[in-house]
Image 1 (cartoon, rainbow, N blue to C red):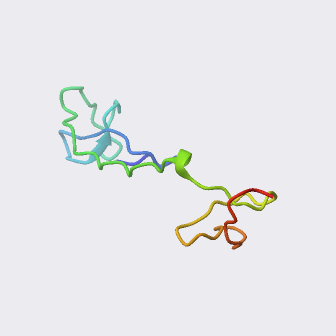
Image 2 (tube, one colour):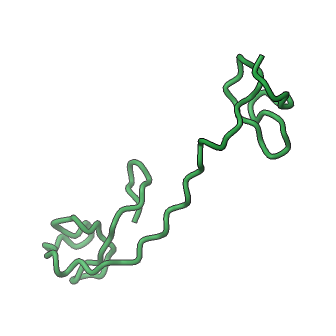
Amino acid sequence: MKCPHCGQNLAAGSCASCGSEVFQESLFCHRCGSKLEKAEAKPVAVEAEAEEPDFSKRILCSDGTCIGVVNEQGVCKVCGKPYTGDPT
């Protein structure tokens, strides 16, 4: 279940009364209002989070004034200039 504010995956369970998906830490069901017990909130499979990119492997644009990174084709994603190997 995703957080409605930040989009992060959160642990979820299901309401024993109506079966709705609820946040695991909820005290009441948002759909039927039933009080949730810790034992009632049965875990629901949480989606595997997408693997985060490794920012240490990115190549910054060689134009000293651009904030972009170089893509697989060897050009900057922001300004479109080809990578020259050293910042100017």
